[in-house]
Image (tube, rainbow over all chains, first blue to last red; front, top):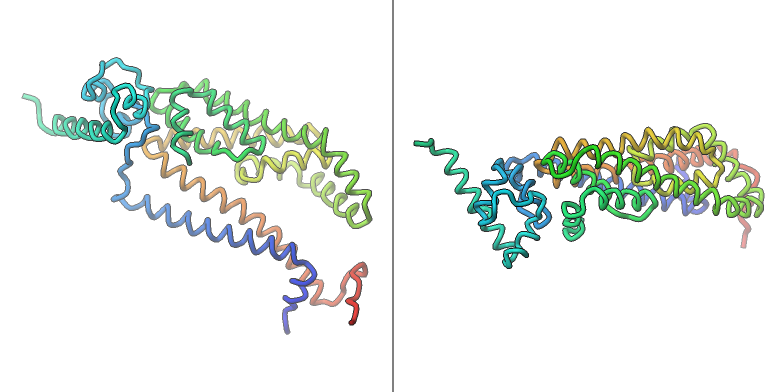
Length: 120
Length: 212
């Protein structure tokens, strides 16, 4: 038995086109969904990059460092507003966001060292 | 997802998130889900109080729904009537849409709030224009928005360590769901037509093709 695809296409073209497009979009996003789940499932990709929109509080939570320690390490008062974003801090200090990111990374490494070495 | 846009959130907090949610529910394509995820993560870090975030977003989402519904009801009813008066085919189409809204309207509105949130804003004016009762609309839209707003803020709160991952996963999943459901509905419709052609009982209103 032949399936009258051509008749369907001729008589209901808009419907067929709409079906094909939505099915294609669904497939593409299903594939993207699977790829992204695998990407984040990989422990190598777990570490989050520092971003300009992140606040001091967010960074200190993600990297498990008390906010006052972090702000002190960045050369600011410990009681500085934790809602400042990295971009704002960079602007206040008159440096670029990348430079500030390097400073934050150094601070994190220093903090980690202090954590692992037992206090005398 | 623009970085500039996200940078506004920690500075202006809840009002920016709520405004984005409202505009998104009115049909302006803004990343409301990502904003709510970020808001939830800011609750986790203690930068935004939850008692401010959730009610503000919830109110914004419901107002956005109401805006769409009343836009359709006040401006769209005329358009629908004009379309219905154009011919019997159009009239039948609109009657079928109305019957569908009567039977399944509540569940459709409910599901397009959270599970199929991508198409929610565009369903609102249609529901209003097609004459869905306001009470049914509200009774479906409000619980749906509780799930949508609550779901995303809770996701952001729980996975505040890595909201970028959650945003990407949820974003792709929601597009897949919306497109998938529309494709299924269209596919079912096509299948019905196909079966009708196969069984040769074509409806009479289709004209036989003229020979040249």
